[in-house]
Image (cartoon, rainbow, N blue to C red; front, side, top):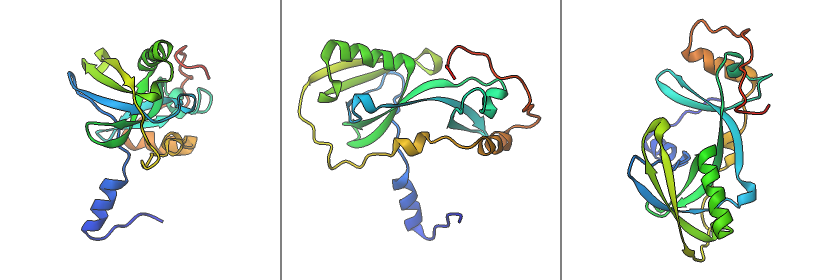
Amino acid sequence: MAYVGKGLSAIKEANEGGVAYLKLKDGESTEIRIITPLDEIMSVYEHAEQIDGRWKNFTCLGKDRCPACKMGKNASFKSFIVVYDRKDDKTKIFKASKTVGTALLALVEEYGDITKRDLKIKREGEKLNTKYHFFARDIKAFDSSTLELPDVDEIVAPKTPEELMTLLNSGARDIDVESDVAESDDYMF
């Protein structure tokens, strides 16, 4: 059944129900605490498509099943890391690229379990010229037991090929679904 909300309380519920993502502009910084245990960080290959003027992200189904791949569109590797943003006093998802993940791995090699300390994160640049710098803080206890954590499994749950075709067709015309699968070494399935 389709959602129907009534009254101003529906607006309040919709604003509270969404998942917050950690977003920084060029030159901005914040302090975060990684909540997700490091061996439980969820990673997927993801497509990002502009549909009806808005960016939509969806998990790639693999070159042999994914309609976006069959259209020649490449997916990129993303890790979904639940963090606590100290500046906003809020739990968020930090969607990290492979490059950012590599920087976090370097911190782990240097400091061990980085979930035991806060990290200052600073963004430099825009779009494809963006770099994130991380600065490790001293180890400090942190109780995340009372935090409401987003369901990353639900966020990255793949749609069916049919659902993806409907999504892709909603903002694009004249799509050739029979085109060859994208050839890319960027992802391995």
